[in-house]
Every structure is written in C-alpha cells, then in structure tokens.
Image 1: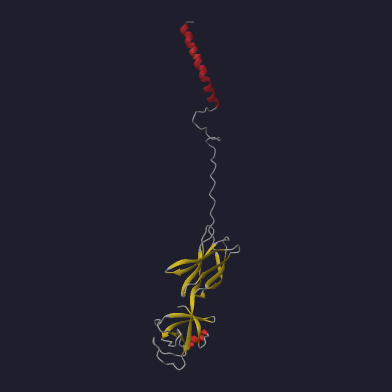
Image 2: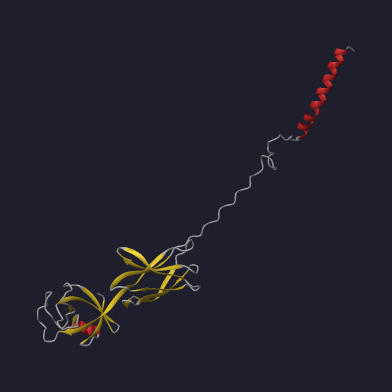
Length: 245
C-alpha cells in the first residue's frame, strides 16, 4: 500500500470515531446543554401550565345601623348639647362625628370611637344663641359604608326678663299691624323688626312667637308676652324666660 492511500484511510477512521458519540446521542434522545441556554422545564412541551391563583374576592362594605338613644340640643349658652347612641353591624371602634351646619357647610363639632358594644357619646359647647342643623355621621371604612342621620338641632338660649299684657287691651291696634285678641300668639319688643321669629322656653315648655308689637316700657323688662303666649309657656305675670335671640 502506498503512503498516500494509508494516510487517506487514517483520516476516514478518525472522522468516523469523532462523529459516533453525536450520532449515538441523537439516536437515544439525549440532549446536550449549551452555555447560556436554559434547559426546558420537565414535563415536555405538551405538559399543562399550572394556573395562577385567583385573586381573593373583596367583601362589600356593610351598611351600619345607627340608633340615637338620647339627644339634647336645646341648652343655655355656655352649656353642652349632648347626644348618645349605638352603631351596630360594623366592627367596634368605628369613628362617629357630631356635625353642625354653618355657612352652608357641615363642620365637625365632636368625634368619638364606638365602644366594644358599639355605643358612643358626643357633645359640644353651645357658644351663641340661635339654632343650627345637626347630624351624626358614621365614618366610612373598608368594612362599613358612611351614613349620617339628622338629630335634634343645637339650639342656644339666653335668659331674659319678661312680663305679659292683654286684658283691657283686646281689640286695640298692634304696632306691627292687626289687633290684639285673647288668642293672639306673639310678643312685644322695642327694637327687633316686626315679624322676627323667636323661640321661648320656660319650665320645660317651648313656644315659637313673632314680634307683633312694641314694648314693654318698664325698665328691666325686654319682652312683653301676649296672654296666649304666656299661657302656652306656663309663665307667670313677670319673671325669667329663655329666648334664642
């Protein structure tokens, strides 16, 4: 055999030996890893993917139940208007506010958290005469809806000295128009505009009356009540009454 033929046959044998492992790996289904290439997950391409966990359903906020058990809004200036109640159907320590309406807006006057039984107490100092729309508001949370309820108005009164008139004057003309009768509800005042509406309190009774006449003209007296107004209040001939202006 010539040297050239022998060299050619040696190259063929060497190439065949190099290719054998690759052919064997292909025939047995073995996989060769390559640097930087991540091996596929076990289970093969036909395996089903694991479903993602569904998000937990969010519970709808509950509607609180608000019950007002005590309300006292009619007090003298400097006193405290007080409200009590209970909130149920929501977690304890729920925020509750007492709000009054001033200048067209609801403004917080007091706040409290409900007890373990849902009870609350709210109060505010009355600093002026007159009345204000008042409500109790349960604050909204992730567990409870916000609700509100109107309650007895915060109503400030002051003490004043008054007398009454009527008998012997029935049929006479009133300074603000009309004539005085035994059934006329109203009061006389020296300067308040005719028709001014006032609320009077005396001995637990309340009467609303308008300014219908001028007077009284006795020193130390601010109002003259008609006989009918006096009777509804259970008022005597002279003495102290409460008025909201």
